[in-house]
Image (cartoon, rainbow, N blue to C red; front, side, top):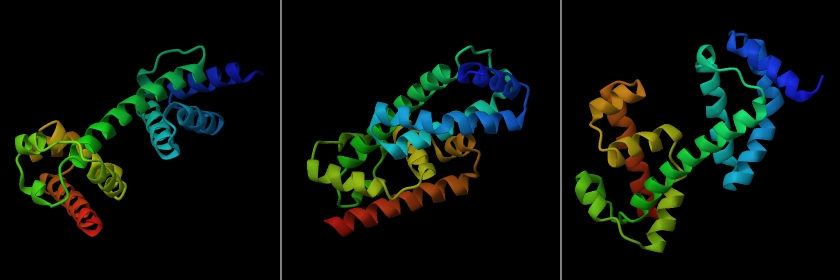
Length: 186
C-alpha cells in the first residue's frame, strides 16, 4: 500500500476518533513535517513547536476535520501557516522588546509608552533576543497578549484558560527574567 493511501486511511480513522490512527499518522509524518518546517523557517525548535501545534490541533478538532486526499500536503500547508503565525508573533515580540531598552524602566510603562519607546538599537535587539530565549512558550504568549494585543489580565486569563492571578504571575515572572537577563548583559 502506498504511503499516500495509508495516510488517507489513517486520516479517516482519526476523524472518527481513533487514537491509534492519530499516533500512527504522527509517527509517519512528524519528522517529514519537522524537516519541511526547517526548510521553511531555518529553525529546528520553531519547526518542532509548530509541528506539535499542528498535531495537537488536528487531534482537538478531529471531529470537525474534512476529508483529505493528500494528507501530507494538507499538513504541510497547515504547518506552513502555523509557522508563519509563530514567526510573525515572535517578530513582533522581538521587535518591541529589542527596542524597549535594557534599563528596566519599561516594566512600569503603559502600553502606549512601551510602543513609543520602540526604536532600532542592534545591541539591545541582540540582548533581548537572547533574553527571550529564556522564556517559556506560555510566557512569550502571555507577554504578546498583554503588550501587543493590549488585553487586560482578565481577558488574558480568559483566553489562556488560567486564573487572573496565574496570568499576572506568569507575565510578572517573564518580565523579571527579561529584566535579569538584560541587566546581566549591560
